[in-house]
Amino acid sequence: MSKKVKPITGNSVGIVKTNFFNFAERPNELILSSGIKLGPITIAYETYGELNRQKSNAILVFHALSGDSHAAGYNSPDDTKPGWWDMMIGPGKPFDTKKFFVICANVIGGCKGSTGPSSINPETGKHFGLAFPVVSIKDMLKPQKKLLEHLGIKKLFCVAGGSMGGMQVLQWLVTYPETALGAMIIATSPTHTAQAIAFNSVGRFAIISDPNWNNGNYYGMKTPKTGLSIA
Image (cartoon, rainbow, N blue to C red):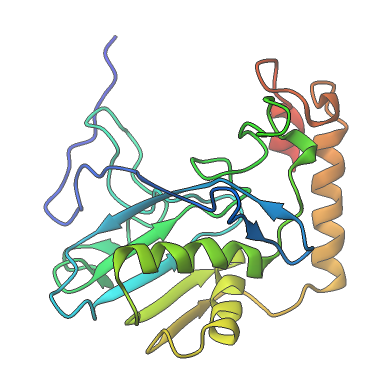
């Protein structure tokens, strides 16, 4: 039986391509908040709409913990599910791609095209796994700022995001206050509550308790899907 392909409607951004930006080659590695150097770095990102001549209509969207750079549209005609914020991004939608140039990048550590634990560690030639350094919300923003410089965008019309994406918005306003005219901060906070910390702890223990966890070295093997689904 052939896969049923969902038709692409007139208010969809349609078929979109994931792009890749590389930087932080040695000896110019990115210095993380911990002081650890990370590089080279690849950032996966998608864009929707057209950047105007003044480069003044760009909106940078930050994804949540379980999100990635594929925020809208379809990556191929066979896709049955659109990007995670497809209801918001497209012609005539709240982030109207007839007016705005929308950018969404996968954060470092995200493993959906950007450098993270599944990437090859240049020091060992193997997957980073648990050797990948801990990254802060501020660390996640530095590569995205480099991406904007690569695209020639000096000032954003808006930054937007929810949950962990909202935390990135808050940090962006602190770290780069002059680079955005506005901000949309959704379902987030500057700190975690005790309840949130507890739930996150339960989720982590569910994953590492999975028999296929293998101390984080499960690449090329069975993955801890049961633990992840519980989390």
